[in-house]
Image (cartoon, rainbow, N blue to C red; front, side, top):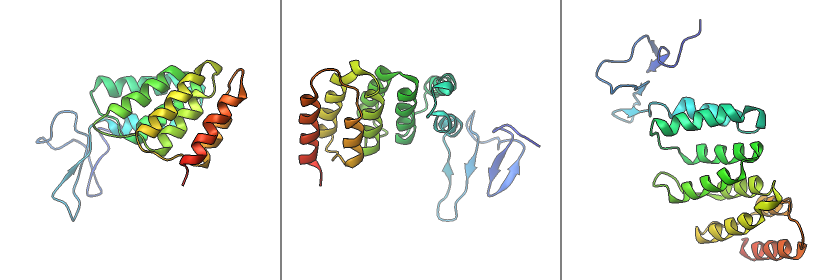
Length: 183
């Protein structure tokens, strides 16, 4: 028997048909941990995040991902880093490179999350799928350095695979600079 998230609430492993009356509106679950008094799960991050994560690798599922992202924002739920990263991957898969760049800026400005190596690697991969985004790839490298995030071999691989019209020397200069920053 299938239940909606609201119907399928769990407290200490017990299914509850209705949320406790003393929880704030739209609260879907309360988890009681032995070492904690109570940890409350954000009301909608889990379903939105799950939708975004499970659909981020295909352009065919972009409408579903975008809808979940818009609902998350409409509900004023602050996305975590994993959700931002999945959105950047989804943008790359869907050919939404400008949105990927915008999301990178948003996560960098966020109080909730700061971009990490995976964030930048996903951004390079997403941006590199479109030739016209090469300046954004260079800009992203600058952001990465400003954040103090060191590149790795996956970063170099993502940049090597970037589509770049014209002078390959410019790409090689960027790759050489990355090599100097690698541990």
